[in-house]
Image: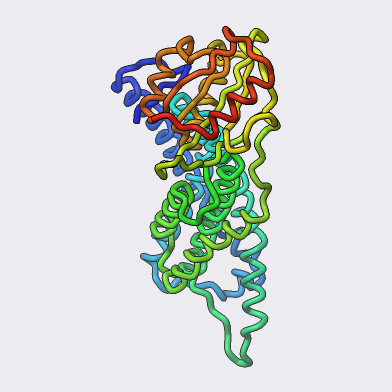
Length: 369
C-alpha cells in the first residue's frame, strides 16, 4: 500500500540511501570518539564505583576469576557507555530521517517514545547503578552472611548482572511509554493480540534476547514474562484515549448481507460557506472529523488520511462537495487504502439542519454496493 502525504516530495531512492549513509557515518564517527573517551576513563570509573559499594573494593572482596571474561565485560561496559553517550544524537537523527514518511499519529508516537524513552531509560539506569545495585548488594550481604565464611564476589558476574538489569529496565521503560502513547493516539486497540501491541512486545523481547548476559540466562524466561506483564499492568492505569469534542472513531456496522462497514463523515465547513451541524446530531456509529477546509489545509488532510487508515474506514463522506476538489494524491491514497470517497454536496444544495441530520441517519443505515 503506497500512501502520499501532502508534504511528500518525489525523490529517487538513491537520495534516501545517501542521506541514510551520511547520517549513519556521522553517528559512527561520534560513537567511535565516545568509545575512545570511555576506554580512557573506564578504569577510573570502575574503581570509583567499586569503592562506593557497601562491601568495599579495598577489602579484597571482589576478585577476577576469569581474565578473558573480565576483558569482555570491560569492553561491554565501554560499549554501553558509548551507546548511552550517542543516544541523544541518534534519537535526533532518527526523528529527522523518518519524519517526512510518517503519518501524523505515527510521527507523534515516534517522537514521544524516542525522546521520553531515552530520557527516562537513561535516568532509571543511572539510578540503578548509583543507588539500586549498591543497595541490593549490601542487602544480599547482610541477609546471607554465615559465621566464619567470607564473602567473595566475581567482578565479571557482578558487572554482567548490572549490565543485564540495566538493559531490562531500559526495555521496560520503552515498552511502557510505547504502549501508553499508542493507546492515547488510538494506534492500538484493546484486543490482547492487536498487531501494534504484538510488534512492540516482539521487538523488545528480541532485543532482550540479544542483550541478556550469560549471568542471567537462568532467569531469562521469568524476566521475559515480566517484560510483557509489567508494561501491560502499568498501561491499564494510564489515561484512556480521548477524542476531541468534534471527532470520534467509526463503529463497525453490519449490512443486510453480513458485510462489515466503517464510515467516516468529514464535516468540512468550506471556510464558513457550507451548512454544518454538530457531531451530536449524527448517529453514534458514524465516525466524525471536522475542519474549516480540507482542500486548503494540508495538515488536516494528512490527519484525515491517518484517521482513515487507523480506523480501517471503507467509506469517507465529505459534507460540502463530492470530494473532487481534494488533491489527486489524496484521492489516490484513499483508493490504495480501499476506501470509497463520496460527498453530500451541501455547499450547492444548502439543506436545512433537519435535512442534514436525516441524510446522516441514512448514511448509517443504508449501504450501497
